[in-house]
Each structure stands twice: as C-alpha cells, then as structure tokens.
Length: 110
Image (cartoon, rainbow, N blue to C red):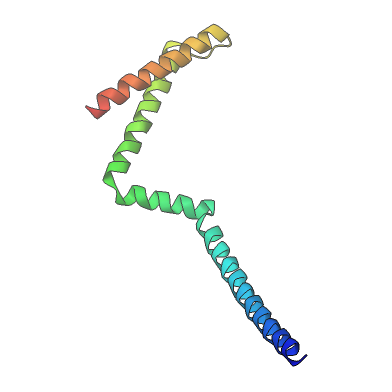
C-alpha cells in the first residue's frame, strides 16, 4: 500500500512539473506571437521597405526605371489612343502601353 501512495505522490509531482513546463512554454509562445505580430504589421513592413530603398542605390535605380517605363507606356497610350469607350480601341491602347513600357525599360537599362 505504501508503495502505491509513494508512486502516486511521485506521479503527481511529475505531473505538476510537466504542467509548469507547459505553462511556461505557452507564455513563451504567446510572447513570440506578439513579437511576430508586431514585425508583420503593414506599417512596419512598409517602413522596412522604404529603409531598404533609401539604403540600397540599386533598388532605388530599379524603382526609378520602373516608374519611368510605366509612365512612358501610359503616356504613349493616352497620346496615340486617347480616351475611348470602344473595346477594340481600349485593347489596342493596352497593347501600345505594354510595348511602349517594354521598349522604354529595355532602353533605360542599356
């Protein structure tokens, strides 16, 4: 009888130890989740991206090239096609915009 009581006490002590470990791990997970949540906020991601742009001249150059290419394509479409309600003209305008953007981006890089 005594050995059963002793084994029960040992078992209960080990269960309490495991429950404490589990509670500590849960608290650590909650803390890590909060840190992860704060790091993945859109404002934090945007700030990090803007800092990368400021620090990396290569990234800044790529963004400038992209903006110039898109602007050139858009202006080409507006100049050649103008404002139209015709589906065919709109599709033709998007084609002109696409090819103008591609040509400008190739010429900027070289």
